[in-house]
Image (cartoon, rainbow, N blue to C red):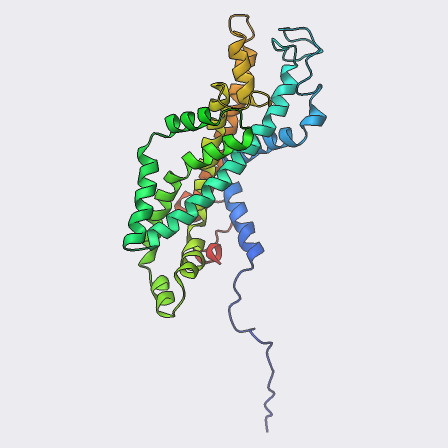
Length: 316
């Protein structure tokens, strides 16, 4: 006679366990890091972030310390020479990273938040509400961004770095909203959105709970694009003298170098060094964007870089 022994399995042992958020984040980071272009961009960006954070420790002198001989060439005391005002160029370059990195990230985040809120609502709404939002976005897209930015900055001149960030955000959100709207319209007709509508969920919950998680890589790409534009815009406005000339940034270094005719006096480093830093910082964000694209598009991922996650693992 055989006896049957019943074994009680732990609750949920036979069900498939969804991946944890930390595991999903780890796979996303690994996918971005596996992209060679993104890896180079992360390294370059990391260098500039460290420059900005540890500028007081790395800089040999203060940012506005001007007790040195004017327009000196490179020497042991001043590796990159001095400005026409007697300031150490290397110290200003290190301190200038703080403003450029901060403006890039703050303006990029604010522009992306506005683009997400408007783009998703514009893509989901129908009727008169969607037409009104579309008119506003198209109005900002039709107006040339750079002239509008110059006009606003000139009107609000000497308002500080906060005004520069506000000008960049006001003129830089529309393109991201347009892209997100197109993707939202594509997702609006999917089965999971239709099911959420029939279950009685509100429009806000459908947009931010059902549609938004499927646009993570697109939103990240929008952020990096907005941050890149913000860095270039801040440097351009400062170079034109429409920003705050009392602060130390790469744009103000270019502004004062131009005013002192640095090229005519042979101090080409005053223009070359900050210009190179601006270009490298903007390039690093663009390179990282290649890795972000690989998160949502498996065809862009590097083969042989390890196990690939399924699409559901990234969306979990």
